Image 1: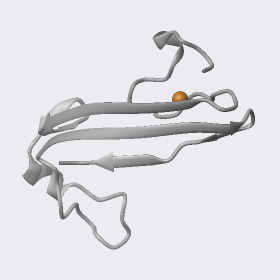
Image 2: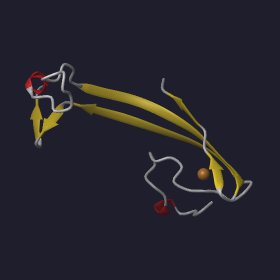
Image 3: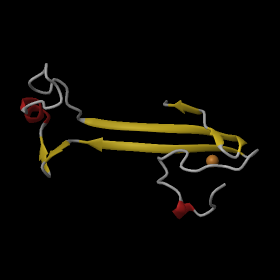
Length: 99
Ligand SMILES: [Cu+2]
């Protein structure tokens, strides 16, 4: 493994920011919980109705936003596997499970 210090790695949500030496295996399990609500525009709270009236700069077909997120509550577990068959190749298949 490139380093054993946590501060030398990317944030916990960033997978596979490192390499291993030939023959090494690593199994990881990471859990995250995201919970957000409401919308903010230019630093101020804005209602979903007002977001829907705003010009849609992301689409040439829809002048305004037809869908606006109001609340997100998600728990996610990420299982990871790393295997290094040579010193120049690290294989990293990923399995996601969202209950
Ligand atoms: Cu690893």
